[in-house]
Amino acid sequence: MIYGAYIDDNKPIDEIIKAIGDIYDQYNWLITDQQIFSDKYEGLFANKDYVWLTGKEFRKIAESNDLYAIWCVASAFPQNITLEEILKYELPYADGNADFWVDDVKLQTPLSELEIVIFDGCSCFILSKRKAYRDLFLENINGSYDLIENNRKTNAITTIITDEVRNMQEYIENDNFVWLIYHAIFNNIAIDSKYDSLLINCKTRLKTHGLL
Image: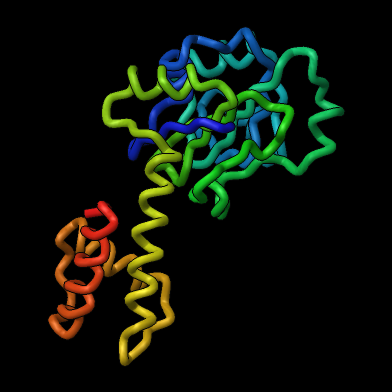
């Protein structure tokens, strides 16, 4: 089973690692799909498919407070796992990865213990085989929530909305429209009054399923 925790904020990687137990030195680290800005370490990350670091090396870099990541996956591997073994798998990535939002997420490399993901400069999360890391993230990072529980709830909600949209006389095949209805229900975003009956139907079903 994989555990996950999420926050709608771009936290520094060092803050995340310290929040889950200051675990740098327990692992070697593979940094992939990185868009990282740094005055001191720009050359280390720029135009690289991956960067392989010991825990000591990663600690020095991250604790410098000279990293700003827009995209990044930092994967932690037990120290007995070699880079050669890891590179038999596809490199973990964040940009365009829809598998983060499914009901049962997986680590992208099965040999890893943990993924720290910086997503589009506006959110970050962890995925881990260890429940303790999820629990520490939730305990120590204010405003965070359980990624897996949230995925399952959100996917259940959008499934109902999609079903109701498909029942419309004027059927709209558009994922963006489904999310428009979602935000109209949960964030009070104004939409055309011609969709009032759709909103009522969606809310009725969501309440029936305990999702509203």
